[in-house]
Image 1 (cartoon, rainbow, N blue to C red):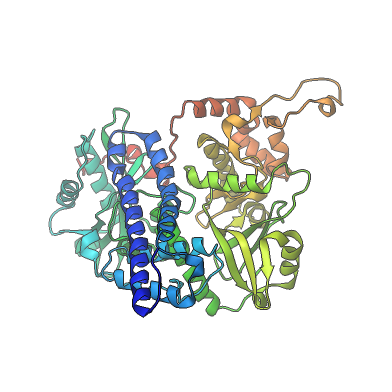
Image 2: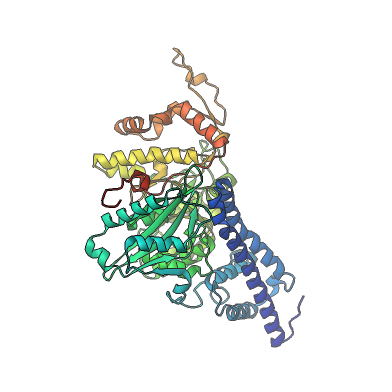
Length: 584
């Protein structure tokens, strides 16, 4: 334990502790890269269960690394006995170490996490933390390290050959010539002759993006007046040979692939800021924090979100109010109308109908974090001691929080401090959408999406529990997403039963119902309320109301076979394309 008696000692101590924190970060990032770097081998060998386990392991390493780093600090100093000058000096010493560090922005977040752990998230002070970034990242500085540029002076086919000479896999294509011919055909159908002639570069990110059973080559086609996404989706066939599954050229397709309801990518890079900057150029409607999170750098994504949120607060004047939709029994949910997230706080007490505890609700949210969300469950992010300005609170909302969530908030003269908070992407609640929408085709699509959502969650080994349509949202792309997790569980934790058949009208009143019993035949009465919607759900997904479907889903879950659902339409898959004579 170092003793501080003068300024020189203080400088030595802060330099030592700063080095210790950065060493902890570097170890953590190497661990992250080791797991991420194994994605290609897992993909090539079709090790899908190992892929899912790697996702879970990578999520847990941050907390483990953080605990180790904080423990190391206590070998050098008693942190809580240090004065403000020590913490200011520590930040300055740490900042010097970050010069030219390729992951400086992630290292800043790790430093913040250390301070947060030591002070139990009670200290939010830019003089001792990196509330604001230490410097502005200039996109393009490391572009050559993360992007491959391909010559387009030859034919489309020559270009595709060049791409697959650069991105190599340790297994054979099943039908390479056929696949490449289909890709060329799709490109020629999508682009006019003038556009094809004006292409001057194809830029592809060097990292391959792995997730579940797919690998993606992500880039763009560059023309003088525009750029368009250029994404090649790869999979293995049943013989574990490589095949091109789709070529995606629409921004909407890329947006869904990088959606907030999917598992994080494995994309190996030493320059994440540059990768995110490139992706943001492809997806300008997505914020930087969303893209960091999609890469599995969710802790830094939270930091970037907070910075973005503070900036938005400085440039807006609307007030926090109740989120649209039916009030929840477990969560108080509110939003800032001008901002694209909702804020969720667990209530102090639940009604008798909710057989859950506060800790169980937290477990459910952790479970979703660790699960392959298959594009159907919204990602959530947990914050401690999140501060909101008191004068931006609608009085009725503040009153509800004080009455329903008193144990989770602290109100000062200037702020509402939320001790435990979840933040989630804002969507239109499905019940409101169905009330407001008049187009029969859109209503039919939404109900079909609702059924698919429930089924695909079940295929991910999750029983959604409370499947009222108010607990689902619909995105601007028309995709239905589940977002209420307080009653979810694994499929094997429920007993799916038939309703008894009897002429006795009181039979149901005397039915013995266990805490894990579920009666699928009753689903038609409560998933959606209005009769025409019930009939539509029964028409499209009537099997959801049968015991047979749920028992079948349980059996599939027992096999631990990893289910896969494409993040793009079936029509985009090459398997559904036919080569024309002009391409042969």
